[in-house]
Length: 54
View 1 (cartoon, helix red, strand yellow):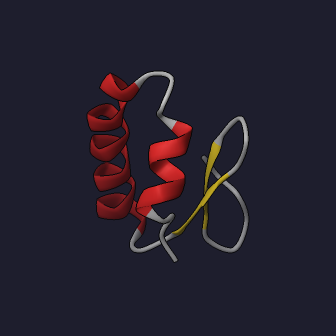
View 2: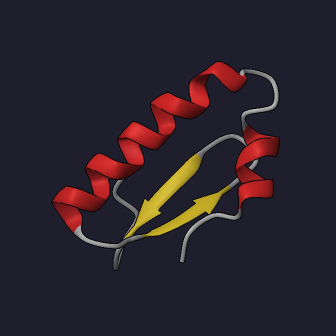
């Protein structure tokens, strides 16, 4: 399950220039780990498989 575009937009609203950096990280995590769940929280974005790892 991926984070919604709206949730990501809210998370990066204070610093939108970091969105491309996040997208590169997300692509790299998916290349290395397969499809993982992405959860947007108030202060962080969490990548999880069985456990949170990034």
